[in-house]
Image 1: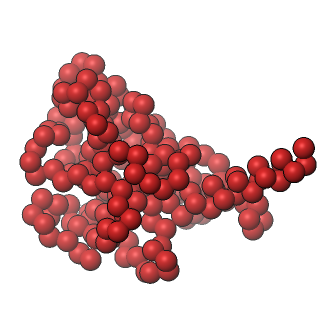
Image 2 (image 1 turned 90 degrees about the vertical axis):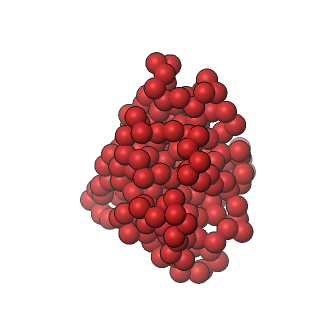
Length: 203
C-alpha cells in the first residue's frame, strides 16, 4: 500500500509540474515575449487572447466560442483568476444564433502553489468548459489545445482568435478566420488584434 501511495504522489507531482507551466512554458529555456493587452499570442501548444475578444474552438463539426470577461489576481500576482462565457454549438451548423446553443458562465482559478518544493500543489478550477469540450487554462487568456488531464498533444482541437467582441458577430465560416492546431514545430508569434486578418505578426 505504501508503494502505491508513493507512486500516486510521484504521478500527481509530475502532472502538476506540467500544468503549472501552462501554455506559456518556455521552449527549452528560450525567452518568450508575452503579448501586450491588445495582442494575441500563438504558441505551439496554446493561444492567448485579450480580454473581451472571442476565441473560436472547433473539434470536427462541433463549435465553441469563448470570451474572457474579467482577469484578476488574489493575495499575490501568482494567484490568478478569470471569468468567462462560453457558447457551444454541436448541431454541425456552426450557427450560434440557434436556440439550441449551450451557454455557460464560469469563474476560473489558478491559486499560487502551496506547500514545499515538489510537494507544492495548486487547487482550483483550471479548465474551460464549452459543452463536452474541456481545455486547460493557465491564467488570463491562456488556452491550451488539450485538457488538464491530457499530456500535450493533438486531440483534434483547433483554436481561432478573432477581433469579435459579441457572439452576434461570429461567423465560423468567415474566410478570414484562421484556425490553429497543436504543432510543436510552430514558432511563437504575437499578433495585434487589429492585424489578425492581414498577416502582420510580431515574432
